[in-house]
Length: 192
Length: 192
Image 1 (cartoon, rainbow over the protein chains, first blue to last red):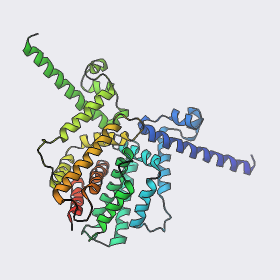
Image 2 (image 1 turned 30 degrees about the vertical axis):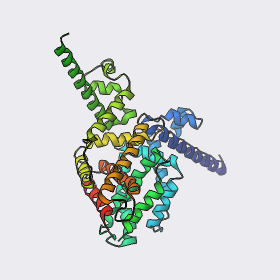
Image 3 (image 1 turned 90 degrees about the vertical axis):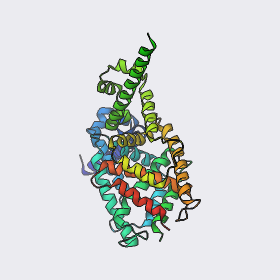
C-alpha cells in the first residue's frame, strides 16, 4: 500500500475511534457506565459489536479512552497560568455543555462503588486537581486567603462546590444558576 | 388466627422488610442501582427472588423504600430548630457511616442519567433541602450573611460543599478531612 494510502487509512481509523468515543460519551450520559453496553455504542456508530472490538477490545478500554478525552479538553497549554477568574469562565463554559457534564457526573457517582474501573482515575485526578487549585489560590492570594485559610485547605472546598453545583444544576437547570452560584463562592473567598 | 398471632406476623413481616432494605443499601453501595439485581439482594437475606417479590414487587419499589429510609434517618422532630453548628455535627456523623454515604452518592450520580427512577426524588429533595438550608442561615444571620449574600443564594453552595466533599472523601478518606473541610466552609460563611 503506497505511503499516502496508509496515511489515509490511519486518519480514517483515528476519526472512527473519535466517533466511537463521542458515542460512548452519549451512552454513558444516558445510562451510566454500568448500564452502557458495547452493543449500544456500536449501534450508534453503525458498527457491529465485533467491528467495535477492533477499535476497543474491551468496555474498560473504551472507558479509558473516554476519560483521556476529558483530560484533553481540560488540558490548557503548559505555560497557562490559571487564575481564579478563569475558573469562573470554565464553569460558564461547563453550563453550555450539559452532555459532557452529565457523563462525568454519572461516572464520578459510579466511581465510589466497589471495584469500579474509573475509581483510580478519579482518586488520582482529585489529588492532582486539589494541588493545582491550591496553586491557583496561592498565585492569587499568597499563603493565606483574606479569610485566613491556607490555599491547601481552601482547594477541597473549591472543587467540592464545582462538583456539587453540577449535580444540582443537572437535576434542575431552571432553578440552579450554576455559574452565578460559583461566582458567589469566589466572592466568599476573596473577601476580607 | 388470634389477634396476638396476627400482630406477631405483622411485626415479623416489617422486620423482614427492614432487613431487605438494609441489604439493598449494601448492594447499591457496592454496585450502584443499575448494577444491583433483586437476586443479589434476595441472596443476602436468604430469600429466593420469588420470596423477595412478596415484599417488594419490583426493583423500583425497593428503591423507593431505600430512599424513604434515608428520609427517615435524616428526619428530626418537627420542632427542632436546625442550627449551623448542628450541620457540622451532621457531617461528623456522616463521616462515621461511609456505607450509607456511598449508597446515596452512587444514587445521586446515577440520578442524572436519562429516565432514572430516583431522578424525581433527588430533584424534589434538593428543592426542599435548599429551602430548609436557607431557613437555617436566616435564623443564624438574618436576611444577609456577613459577606453580603442572601440565605437563598448561599444555600446551594452549602449543599454543594456537603455533596462534593462526600465524593472526595469516599474516593480518598486518608487525604480528605470531610468534617474539618466543612467547618472551614462554615467559617467562611460566618466571617465579617
